[in-house]
Image (tube, rainbow, N blue to C red):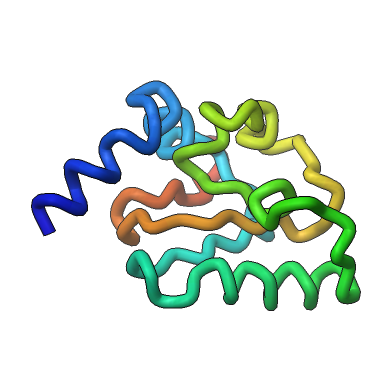
Length: 110
């Protein structure tokens, strides 16, 4: 586990992790969060197919289902904004973050 943690630390910048964790999700956003190497990409394909009517109009699945903590590093930082659209609704995010680190919908202050 320690080796995996070290390797994963090279996948993304601290800025990208912070941006992903601080994003403001919409109530309709879906986070697919699993342990690594257990079918996450397969699940994102299924969920994207359900929301898009089976569209395969993308080169790589992360173009339409971005990683939460990699979006900024991949030039998809604008997708982290609540009003952004990546072409399909609801927005879907791929993650290996634990529940406590996935951003939550914040209630409006009165």
